[in-house]
Image (cartoon, rainbow, N blue to C red; front, side, top):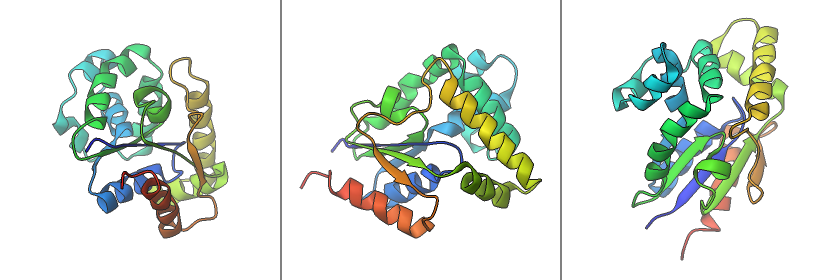
Length: 195
């Protein structure tokens, strides 16, 4: 069976947590596409060459969840040549036998516009900044400023801006627990699965 779940949304909305949980619940493979961009940014040097030469080992770096890696990811993701270098990898992953869940910022709009399920996971900037601050520490007001700056870059980039697909199901996690958000997402997926 080929079945693709596209999970998009801004930083710290919960899309990665939801994507991993959906993959586990339904027995699908999971790809955090943000890790691809984080790995490219973390490699340094020419980002296009880094994207073209990305290896599975590059996705295992221990620093890929840092604020610096997230900032670098947002910057390299704005480069059309980097995005083009990573599209084929993501599309191949999405159509693998056994089902796939991909989470990112342009999965439902660009990478997998024909995905069987498209979710757009969001939350208020304040809620997302608090989550990121609890994860990484630092100054909470600075984390909020960084979240807002990242949103502006991601939503306003010329190539594949962050936005919900026209047929995406909106899931606002601002006031939801992790378990409640996962349950809502799982119900949306279950309703689309072939019987």
